[in-house]
Amino acid sequence: MNFYIIPTPIGNLEDLTLRSKNILSSLDFLVVENKNVSIKLLNKHSINIKKILIYNDNSSEKDRKQILSLLKTSIYGGVISDAGTPLISDPGFKLVRYLLENNVNIISLPGANSITTALVGSGLPTNKFQFLGFAPKQKDAIKNLFKKIISFDGTSIFFESPLRVHKTLIILKALDKKLKLEVCLAKELTKINEKFIRGNLSYVVEAIQSDPTLQKGEFVLLISAQNFEDEETEVEELYEKLRKHLSVKDLSLVISTLTGINKNQLYKKFLQLSKKST
Image (cartoon, rainbow, N blue to C red):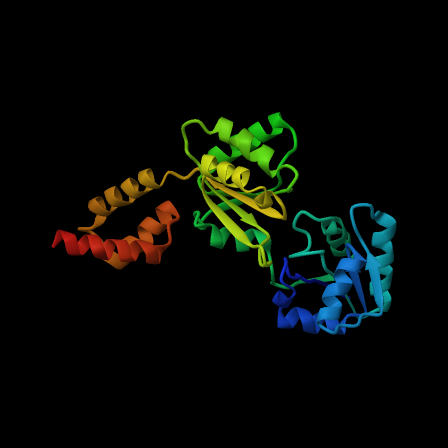
């Protein structure tokens, strides 16, 4: 019994991978969140699946048992979400857990993901990040979220709805009095109106206040509390202490392990520093 976790495009329907398309075309049945949304994707790629089941937030153990029963009489089944990789902040987790407990072979395919798509385009640190799900609604809960952000040495990522994005940013701005957090608001990823708004919280708040259209769509909010000046000082201090004992290549590897900074980035930097010191 094989059950596939199949990523779908997060916006642009052409972002379906070739492997995902081939697997979808071979399935005996498909589990989806919303049939109308999924049919648009399947029609776009001329994929015909006779049996489609709905599994969403309202589904129960009865639905999970039905899917397991189908797997016992079929060869291949799979699940997709409305957009992106299934199980990331969607109800598929309970289903996959249940199938694993019943000895189903789970095969997870790589593909579109709004978290990493937003991260690599944000300009914020990528070597360490945490995903915090959907932003909370209550002010006190947002304050707790702020504490998680500033205590994490990397980039914090969470989803936000268009109805609350402005309010959430204003609350975070009020809390961020000294740190000057770096922010990226990624809007409508891979779609026609895709936009990255980068800067500190004050800049991002002013940007969406001056253009109300920026408050519409789907958002990924990324925030970094990493202090680049302190990091730069730390790296240079380590370089000065160790440069007489290690080659540039070995220095890069050692300091990358200590700081989490990309070793290739460090190698280029140390080559420049070594030229200045000669």
